[in-house]
Amino acid sequence: MPELVEVELSRQLAGALAGRRVRSVEVPDPYASPLGPRALAQALIGTEFGLPRRRGKLLLLDTDGPTLALHFGMSGRLRLDGRTALGPLRYAPSGLEVRWLRFSLGLEDGGRLELFDPRRLARVTLDPDEESLGPDAATLTLAQLRSALGRGHRSALKACLLDQRRVAGIGNLICDEVLWRSGLAPSRPAGSLGETELHRLHRQLRKTIALLLDQGGSHTGTLTPLRRRGSRCPKDGSPLARSVVGNRTTYWCPAHQR
Image (tube, rainbow, N blue to C red; front, top):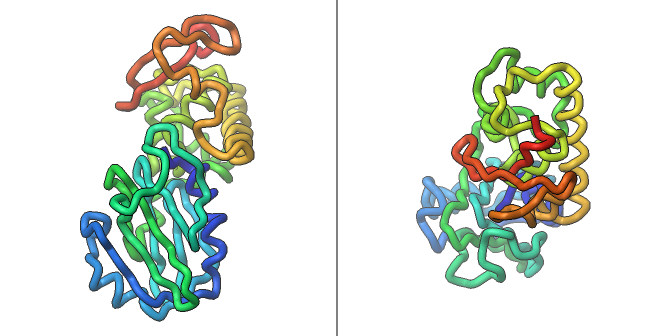
């Protein structure tokens, strides 16, 4: 499922858009955008792309007109000029089928940008409210993390980390991996972390994101392949627990995550 890592890889692919102009806009699935194909075409045709950006799970394609924002949902994938940035996603069908095409831009040089999504959760918007998102998890400072968790905050630690208004970009797989590496229980109150634990969480968050980017996906962590009943912790051999935290299925090790 696309989390920060997958969107960052798509941002790198979209770097090839810089300096190119939009010739046509197609929206095969009207559900993909609240604006509709006519409004998107009027806003985008003839505009020139600058360098792409990312904030959390949102891919931001600036033009000399509006900013085109792509949200990948749970299974969206980007293709530019026939190339994709991602291999198969862990919880999505493999391959890119024509019937999954939700949005497409034809470019004046003959190239094409396409957004596919078998689950129909991907969305296309213009000029999004970027300030509604918290600081990006890949560049999060210790002070920003401390503020996001809030001293004395009673919500579950995992729920706070998944809240995109607090920290942008962390999804279910990254969160479980980071908490497992940090030795922190996902259900403990977010505001209960001591300063040493906060430093450890911050360090592991930055290290884990860098590692997953290098390995090519959020699903490449140590814990992810063990997200099934009966698995044991690869660190200490204890049985992994399966819980629901923040409305998300959660795998963790009660023996070392406290």
